Amino acid sequence: MDYTDQYVYVNVGDAVAATEMDNDELRLTLNFNNDRVPYALVEVISFIIKTNNSTNNRFTLKCTELPQNYLGYDNIGSALAIAGFSADITAGNHVYEMCGAAPKLMFANPRMLTLYITNDQGVKQPVGVPDNIEGFTVFLKVSYPKSGEIPGLYRAQIPL
Image (cartoon, rainbow, N blue to C red; front, side):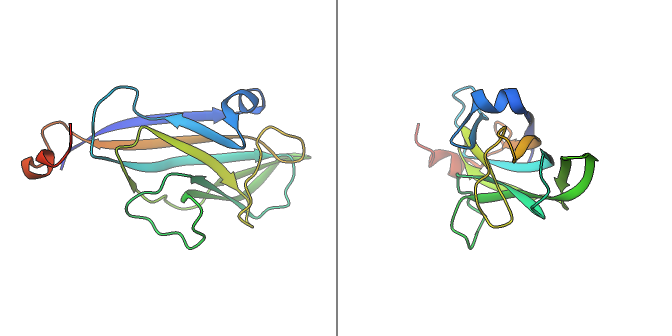
């Protein structure tokens, strides 16, 4: 099947975190129009975190939405990517970068994703506050089935 790819870049820094994030979650709109796609494949291409402490070994990028091809034993959201400690930038500033390749998760008719970050104990981390994550960047690839590529039998089952 052929797909149409959409690339989404998110850069959440100190100033942006206070305005775009609510309760340590970032709501990211994926589909701005009213197209009724049956599903989308979401894959993280890059994930980098900057912190002002180095007390964690890794951070996990998660979303509250549940994909159809995912199972998490913590039963809390879906893990999109894991970032391990990479290097110290300066005294008091540390970088965590994505480890390995991220999975392609299939979401049913996704309009938005609600992203958040957990530490290595699974606790949600606030962004842009002292003694924590200063900011992060995420680069996503979202793949939708091309128009006309969905089999007729399946297309007939999608309510309009």
